[in-house]
Length: 142
Image (cartoon, rainbow, N blue to C red; front, top):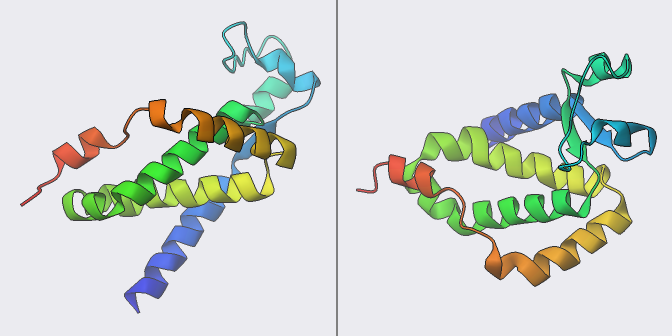
């Protein structure tokens, strides 16, 4: 019974997050990317900036795919340790975020971008840093 409740909560968190997504991938919206490849939402630029300030912005880029694949892989590889050391973080943050990323990759990011991002991830994954070190250290390992 607990699994069903957890799945419902996870699905609810995932759905609530998906509602607040804004995928940026058109030429017009490139106006929101500054010279440092960061999202720059200056309301004075355009009225549409006001409309996306309350959204979670996901860039339709290979870098987004690479980041999401790495996060998901780290959640999978560290799941047992996170459950043992910091169950609350695993249940309320890591797992819902990984599920949300899977949904974004499967339904929102352009398939061509996903393929290229997957190629980049495979080429670079050995160089990417370990995640969740602080979350694991903050928990009780005993």
